[in-house]
Amino acid sequence: MLDNKIIEWRHYLHTIPEIGFEETMTSDFIANKLEEFGIEVCRNIGKTGMVGILKRGTSDKSIALRADFDAIAVTEKNGFDYDSKHRGMMHGCGHDGHSAMLLGAAYQLSQQANFDGTVYFVFQPAEEQGTGAKAMIDDGLFTRWKIDSIYAMHNMPGIEIGSFLISPSSIMASENHFKIEVLASGGHAAMPHLGSDPVLAACNIVSTLQSIITRNLDAIHEPAVLSVTDINTNGGANVIPTVVTLTGDTRCFSDDTQAYIKTAMERVVAGVTSAAGLGYNYEFSNCVLSTVNSSDKSDIAVRVAKKVVGENKVNDKCKPYCTSEDFSFMQREVPSCYILVGNGSKGEKGGVALHLPNYDFNDQLLMIGVNFWVELVRDQLAI
Ligand SMILES: [Zn+2]
Ligand SMILES: [Zn+2]
Image (cartoon, helix red, strand yellow):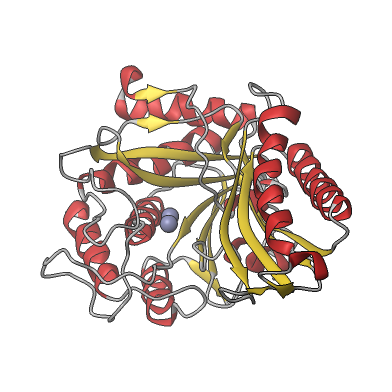
């Protein structure tokens, strides 16, 4: 039975979690399976990434299905017989399940002739560090192959098993990191008037940065989060420092808002330091873009999901999450849809949150995922 085989694959992948770009055992396993199914495999697309290619008929239509396969640096505390055998690493985000589902779909489609066109099975490394999708793109994912559209699926604990959450537009935020250095001459804590103090200015910057979110952005249409997560100085109890370093993270849902926040942050930093007669350095880097679905592809995903799990298990107006996904880089290349699917309600099997040491992908989701992928291909590459 396919169900049992897929569970076996998932459990095996669960025992060998590997961190981004080091997924050699994982990618060997996936590539061997695809070859066993008679699917052409092109490896080393984004270092450990690969593309499986399955063509039927004569149509030049195509569709790509993407699964991520990297793990996270967490020590597993589940106690299953298939617990991680790699110390300090764990499939704590369910990417073992995503890969097993896509392998299951590859197997099923390899046994069928009832579609016309090409299916690309995209197995992506290093999603957790946000660099795997880009590495695959840089290695020609969208130039070597003519990919019409791409879809990805991620499990979501706390949501009823097999319930689909699909957004017609934004589904996840961009992730941006910043580093601000406030530069002063420092001095003696007892005689601050003889030097200059970066601490007071840095504290003002921390509070004033929040005004960008609450005073400058449209609360409904441009939601954003800004968190200063680390404050570091080179001072001591009686020594006023010469440098205060503020680091942090900001998230939002469009490229325009992201560009605005980047500029507005520098305005605040320049303004506050100038008022205090101090200098500054400012760095803002985008790690991951916002994940925004194409509305026509989300309509397709909704239609297929309803067919697979029924009308009332599909939320077609899913509100966005503030987490981030590097599938967003693939979304800038071709029309796409990123789909969330329930891993189990809170307190039930599969309900433990992502990235916790006792998280586990719910095996009941495997065949639902397989059926969704197969139906999507049949729908898009109909004869
Ligand atoms: Zn994750
Ligand atoms: Zn994940």
